[in-house]
Length: 224
Length: 298
Ligand SMILES: Nc1ncnc2c1ncn2[C@@H]1O[C@H](COP(=O)(O)OP(=O)(O)O)[C@@H](O)[C@H]1O
Ligand SMILES: [Mg+2]
Image (cartoon, rainbow over all chains, first blue to last red; front, side, top):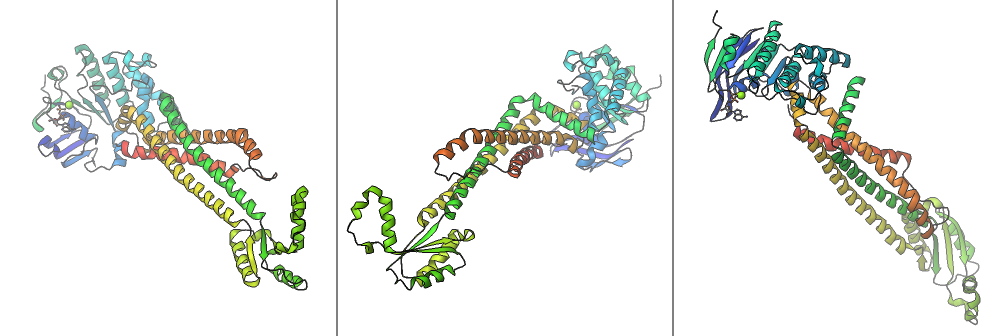
């Protein structure tokens, strides 16, 4: 599903964010990307949804080479990828419903289709009773669940999460992890960048470790 | 398709509602700019009409150096009548001239008592065919008259008309410069208004790009917003012009300006009104296009 060959990303000549990264992630995998702050996790994810272009190397998503993707093609790549952030990136002026519907409207989906899917996605994250609220009226955990609903409402092939639990406390984090696992169980490939090792202890999965942009570890889960 | 359009329009209107101050600033600037341009256009058109009308009433008068003998007169008149431009010709002898002068003086006519009628020059009055009553043809006829007759002096108010025409030209020039300047200013303000709303909505733009909205999908509502603002600006300027034209200008000017009774000030024709409103739309579109180009990237 995701293939990287010798991918390097430099923001400037003396700052290398990702260095010579080669790895494969299969369809339906669940992978943690770990590493200290500044290790290059965010940069790695950003290259996958074409927010950054690699300086060197090749990236293939779903067998399609996106290394030299052109602007007009980018939206179609992104429709296959849901992204979740630490800071949720919700529109405060819009209702919960509108925030989730936004992703479908942006793809030009019909209105009746939108309302049905939005309701389903919100039900999936347990927020179908909060449709008309605004994000700021809700807790951090609820806001992140809205963001996850927005990412999943389009049935993406891949779900990218960049420190999704960075602002949330322990029990809320567990709820969020449960949502990722459910999405993964339905076939979505999940990449979760985090420096929280406790997640892997609770939900053991493959762990890719970066350090100063280099791949320093790639462990399959220990059989318990 | 229709649903798409509906969605875009709703989003554009929503943007405008959210920033009513910015939006009305853009609309008003465009209205002012368009109204100014249209006002100058109207002034120029009407003054030009006036000048044409005055040109049309022109009668050429050739004062002769000496009165021709009685038997030569028909031949001279026939010659002049043969000019294609000439409609009618009449000879005014020194006696006729004196009579007219006397009539004009009315009660003071006694002043002329005992004066030799030969003091006044004989003259020939030419009325031109309507299609030839313009500067160019008049100068050509004058040239020919001067070649064929012993002309002392020619009158048709040319100096005055020339000055008047150069005044019209200046008006037109000022109108173009000022109008162009105002239109540019309007463009600038619209562009900045849209840029401000873009800036205020950068989160939304970012998220739209993130969830796979195409460039077109992101841009169309902002283009629509510009177009709607332009449409409003155009309509406001049109209504303003109509009101001020009918309420103030046409009444007062018609009475104090020395225009013939049947002379009506012109307002914009229906097509010109359409053009005015349409210019507003184009102005708004250009304004938003210019700021979008710089602002929105995926
Ligand atoms: N837009 C940017 N411009 C310049 N340098 C950047 C930019 N983004 C990240 N970096 C640098 O690249 C390195 C990796 O950053 P990042 O990918 O954000 O790491 P992480 O997400 O693991 O904390 C850091 O040294 C960071 O300073
Ligand atoms: Mg990061």
